[in-house]
Image 1: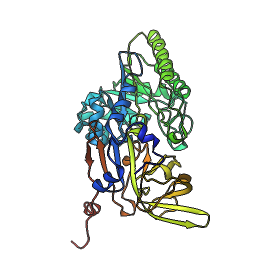
Image 2 (image 1 turned 180 degrees about the vertical axis):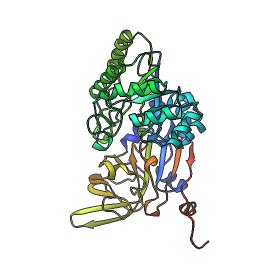
Image 3 (image 1 turned 60 degrees about the vertical axis):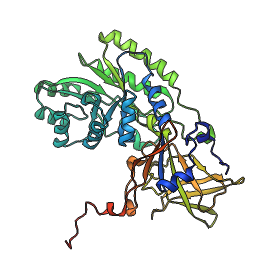
Length: 417
């Protein structure tokens, strides 16, 4: 059987000889499928981004926090970010040491702060009130802080994390009050961090944010590190030959800025970046099955088992994912691809030109490894799918079991008992 519209997965040998339909037959549909070789390649690209001895890549685990996934990231020598106690717990299970974890908190509870403090994990606060709470819990301790560089960028307002409208970080005008709280509780400021947003495709905005962050850093003596954040994008429209992010340009500009700052600051501090999407997105294809085809007025709908409980990005951000159809059709037609959730917004692709689809066909949504499974839910009491990893030798192994019906009520308490 020929593969129509599959130039992307073919070009990188994504399935390594495994047929998509065989994978769903064995592990179920829908199905998250990861390619280990691509994951390792992305880790190495960013680990070697800057020629500076104290440069660290912190993988942002919120993009994909599967245990096996994190184990591979750890093997590749990356460090890791955390946004919750749960992420810290899984990261420790994956083999990361406490000093390799950076807890970038946002509006967290006293319990969560204590969890990090007790495990000697560096914690970043992003408000004066959170710094005050940290000081009360850990006087004389070490802490980091997230500052707003004033620069924001991203593919959607919902993912822009810097600038005037963000809920994140401390504005620079509050630095005097910030320093007073540090002094009040005898806290050592280890480092500062910033994040401008997610899925930008050019280096200029990022470098603007880097420079603004370093201007903030100059207002503090004896920092150990500065974290520039992540957000580096990937080309989601590969079938339209969208170009990749120019890492060489970013490397050159970032290297120049770092060298200049170190000379002025007088200390070879550590610099960090925190990519999530760039590491995880492209190593995954989300497979699904076509169960219905119909016409409603002028539209032809292709109904699949990939509802937004499985992949939220299209309904949440109106995000684009390329779609491959694994059949031998020669003709193409415009269709709207939808899921099986009882919501009108459960749409994967509108008016997308695809090979003529038949009931029973297997389709693949590309670049689904970032904010795919990590945002999945049991909405409509649908079961979350399994996750499979294609090892470098081509073996497909299960790295997360699919939900079973019994899982839906596992933590519920019946009034009849």
